[in-house]
Image (spheres, rainbow, N blue to C red):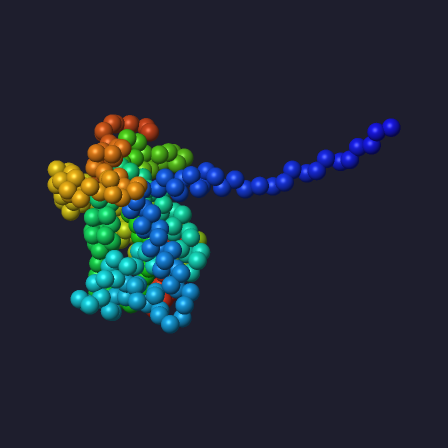
Length: 272
């Protein structure tokens, strides 16, 4: 007589190999942004220095000495989950942008106009029009900016999507998403998201390319400094995959996707 034992249940295992492989392939500037987000979150764990107050955009403290805030606010977050959600939303968008336009172009744009212009617009509207003093931080300003830029490219090839009997322009998608986020998630800055969306539209339409030197100059800088040879995961001008600024061929089609946190005033934030 033979005896049999019940077979063991298969053990649950989480395969993180695809995620690890994806993270290891991230280009240089995207890695640097994620590193800054993590570093500033770690700094928030101590109580000696208030990192959020130091780096947030605070309209009433907008002066020459506080200009650095126009660059620090996108990489500072309020707590672990705020940083995690924004980093998860930003990574694929920023990685794609850098792969399409190159590391040097991404650096010049995101350290320059894609941070400072939305921040400056937010200060103007919040302080001088709404007369509020709501401070904001968070990478969701970049998330909505990149979504808006992508929606312009989508609009060129697929101008509308159908909602029942309505034909809705595809470029309105980030506006709809920002509205849903504002309704479903508390303490989010709808104004901050809209400021990002506005400059995302300008980026997608090509109006911000004047802030980046011509490719000839970029190639000279890359060659002179040997950036491709010296910097791992660097994407050169000649390695970009889809053309500068993502301009796609225009086709007609008749029928035819967070958060600045606030710590002053009403305590808002951008995104989840």
